[in-house]
Structures are given as structure tokens and as C-alpha cells.
Length: 620
Image (cartoon, rainbow, N blue to C red; front, side, top):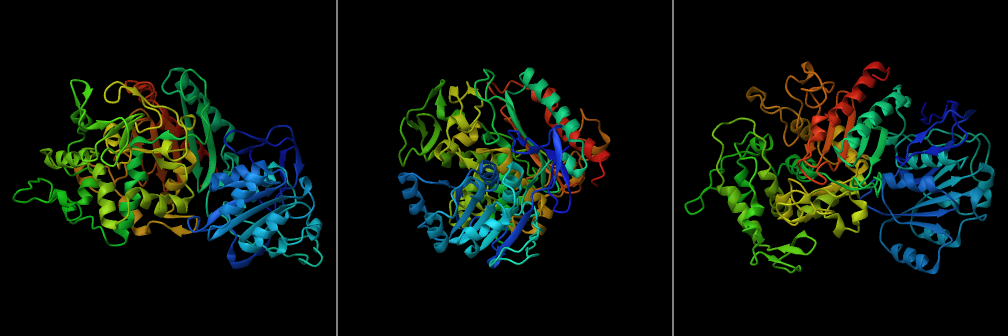
């Protein structure tokens, strides 16, 4: 049985609140009838609540009293500095320094039952200076003793401070769920009886349980556990993350296994996996869609109009100057699938001395291994090799990643802003997706945050850990359009939910609706090509196939779309059923020769379990 907040209902919930490592609330059999936490929105100046425009403010959280679940759930929506009162001298200096930043948004959590009476003078001083939202956990009548609360832009009251209350308050704060409560009694001098401001949910993910949607949560979890644990036992992969969402509600988020087969470090929900080719729809594609939506990029003009290197000229031969972006993104452009650029950097198994250095410099900026940096000018050779590559003889569907090596530089040239900077500012920051990154070891993450991939015996001759597995992306220093992104299931799911929402997430239209419609439809069905623009699609006759022959699961609709990755990753969105599915693993550890993930049909089997549950539920 599961828990989902409804202000009007009385639910049976556990006396002992238990949160699994997924951060989801599960109700045990040892339970008693209790009323759900009563959340009441008391102030909402300037419609501050729920929090919006995550990219336009510097968020900071200040906690007074013990609120661990509230803090952890906040981090699912947006990672931010968290300070717990009282602060030591160093923490206070850091807080004061950060508070000098413009457009600071404070989130203040007050646990009245677990802290000294009254707001800390430091918190009060910061609240006077910056926009603030206060979440007060305690009895309404005690609020009169906390001077200054009513001055906050937003005030949310939670009459209880248990784990469930903390969780739901955090979800409400970010618009994961609505608030509809009203005061049962007057708070003298502050708020009248019956006061309460309604706030809608559905702005961002709601974290709930399958049973809240009429699904059999126990059965779904048991079936998934069985397949995953069997796959781990057969060493298809050492560990994985899985996330499922239905109609914007995350009903399952779970981590299994370990980083490696020696079982030294368990997989956590915060861990970052190498996304491999899922990068294609997570990195360059959203920016290409934005450029198309703004009229800057035409799908049917020659791509060489935007990437001049493909222009054919007297002394600059190109067989690609008439190819369109539509043909290229639908893998209908006759481009060869792959070119092994990295082989050009070695001779007789040794790294060419003129192309590599042991330390970084302006001329050798591209880090491909722990102490190995590639020459900057080598990228020009890559572009030249791509331009001179043959075209396949027949105009038919043939998957190729070559163009995705070009997009980052093309996007940078078109916009005047570096590709990576643009991606973070225009896509990931509005989503609150801090755990979608290139080169995570350069962004404050450590190897303990990242499951390793392959022991590379071909190119780098070392264990690849925290750096991109794909060799083509590696020669670009890890920042490429074909591979290179790392992420966890939760933050990747935010991007995929934005796609599912027709380009909208958190109240922001990140990609125009009509652009999403165009990119996610089959482009060349007459050529038996199932692909959208960048996105993969189901086999054209997928619904008629059994599980072993279908791609992806046979239960998905024809309107669904997604992508897979070589390292053992997979994402799929289904607009018809409002379903989102994310699977991340490091199946290439310790070698790419391990194909048990495919032989066991793990990813699509798990996907089909969800559709089986949906077909027997009353949700649709």
C-alpha cells in the first residue's frame, strides 16, 4: 500500500515512517489510522510559491531544527547550499559571503518542536534582505511566538514534523503537489480562521508510490527485483538505477547492486552513470530544437548552410553539401556509422608524441585519460576525415553518430556561446538538473560518485572511470554530441519529462510545443525508417511482436520515443500513456564484450512490466 497526500482523505499510514534509499515513502503493515499532514499556505506574495524560474535565482536553504527528510527531498528538485542553525564561525562566513549574491532566494525550514523558540537573528537578518519562503513545522498557535515569520514572501504551515510531513512540504514547495488546506482556528494577530491560499501541483515531479495510481506496487517491485537481481547474478552489469514515472508522478526510483563486481560500493540514487548515446538526445538535441523553434535552424535547408566545412568548393571537396538536417537527424543521409579517429593518434600501439602531452596546456587541452592530453588542432583533422568520408550507396535508414560530433562546435559558432555553457544555462539549470554534466571529475564530483566503465584495452590502455567511455568523444576532451554526458536517473528524468510535457517543465516552455511534435514523429516511414529527428522510435510493427522481437517493449504506443546507450543506458517516453522510463547501468564493466544485458532482454522486460500493470489498473 502506498501514500499520496490528499487534504480531504484519512489514510492508513505506518507508525514507523520508513524511507528506502530511493527517497520514496513506503507504508509498512504495522500501521494505524492517522490524518494526513495538514499543509496550509498562509502567505504567497508575488506568487513566490511554488518556486519557479530555478535558473534566475541563487537558492540557499537555512534549517533551524532537525529536518533531514525535508532537506533530502529539496535536493531531488534542486541542489543548493544547506546551512543548519547554529552555524560554526566558518559556516557563518560562507553563508554571509553567498548571501551577497544578487537575486538570492532563501528557503527557511523551521522545526518548532526541535529548536530554540524564535527565529535565529542571522536568519531574520537574511530574510529582511532577500526573498524568502518559510516552511514552519509546528502547531499553528505557536507561530505567534516566532516574530518575523509573517514577513516572508511565502509561508507554508505543516502541523506535523514527521518524515511524511517533511517530504510533502518539500514537494509542495517545488510544485510537485498542490496545497489546499485552511486554518481550523484563528492565529491571533496573524491569520483568521478559514484562511488558506490554494496552490496547484503538477509543476514538477511528484514522488509517490505505484498504489496511489491504482497500480499493484508490491507486484511491480517484485517483478523488477527478480529480473534485476538475476541479471546482476549473471554479471550482465554490477549495478543499475531505474526510474518510472506516470503522468508526472515518480512511482519508482531505485538503485540496485554495486559499482563493480567486488561489491565494495553500493549504487546510490545520486551516482552518475556514463550515458553514452543517450547524450545525443540529452545534449545537442535540445539546443538544436531551440534553434529550430527560434527560426535560426531550418530542417530542410542544406546542413552546409550552417556547417560551412561541408560546403563543396573548388579546393574544398565535399560530398555532403546538399544533405539536410532532417535527413541527418533521421539517420537517412547515407552517412557511414562510425570512424575510428582515435586510431590516427597512435602508431604501432604507442601514442604519437606530437599529439599528446602529460600535462594540459592551451595547445593540448583535451584530457583523454588521467595524465594524457590531446592536441587541440587534432579536432580539425576529425572534421576533415568526416567531410571526406564516403556516403553509403543507398538512401535508407542507417544509424550514424558522425554528425553529432559536429553539432557542439556548430552550435557554438551559431550562438557565439560555448556549447557546454549554453546547454547548462538554457536547458539544465531551468530543470534543476545539476547532475547532468560533462567531465564530472572537473565539476566537483569524485570517482566514488561514478561507477566505472570499461578497462580500455584499445585506446587508453587503462580503467576508464569518471571519463567518457566512447573513444570518439574522448578525443574531444569528453565534450561531444554523440557521447560524454554523465547523469543520475532523477535529473535525466527531468529532461525526459520536459520532452513528455511538450517542452515544458517547472512552468517554463524550454522547447516550443510544435518543435517537440515534429522531432518526435516518424520522418521517413515510406523507407521503413522508424526514426524521429534525433529520437529513436518503436519498430514500425512493434505492437504485433512478442517481447523477444519487439523494440522497445511491445506495450509502448506508436507515439513513444527515446534512445539507448552503449554503456547499458536507456530512456523512453510515451505521450499516449504519459509514461517515462529510465534505466542506467555500466554493463561494459569490465569489458564491452559483455552482452548479457541484451541476451537477457533486461531493459525492455522491465519496461513491459509497467505496461502490464497499467493495463490491469483503473488509472487510464
